[in-house]
Length: 163
Image 1: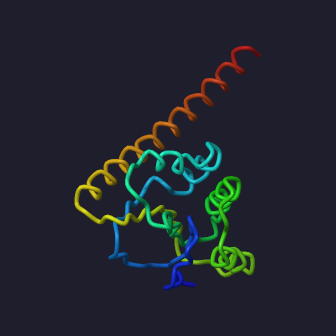
Image 2: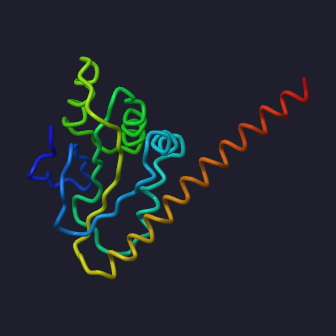
Image 3: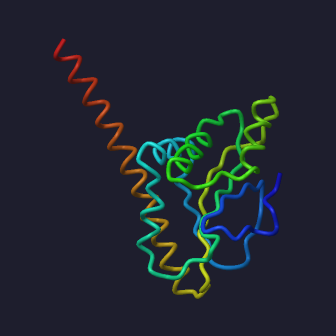
């Protein structure tokens, strides 16, 4: 169930891995992508893809990797897959296989959904800039989450006082 060693030469490829160390290229771990943030990701139209377009460096042909392992709470992964599909990206057999395992009652260990970005130029400058971008996106997700929660609370209070 680990990711394939040979990466297909598609413009964007999505891979599944239980645990894998990446030593080539530069990667950014978007830690905000837990289950709740994954649902937000789907609802707000896969915000990370437009954000990544702001980065001016040359990207590898295999740009975005979805690395995930899930437990019985598969909802976050399904939302992410839905968002990816809505943006016209292909879902590889690895992820379909994971969904089949869950449907059969075989539950992997834990839920972690993360995005990694690899660059041709693995210089320290790119690494620092990309880390800053990751931190910015993480804060943005928390801001959106709390804004949405505040909005819903306001609506509930408004409906209560109207009635």
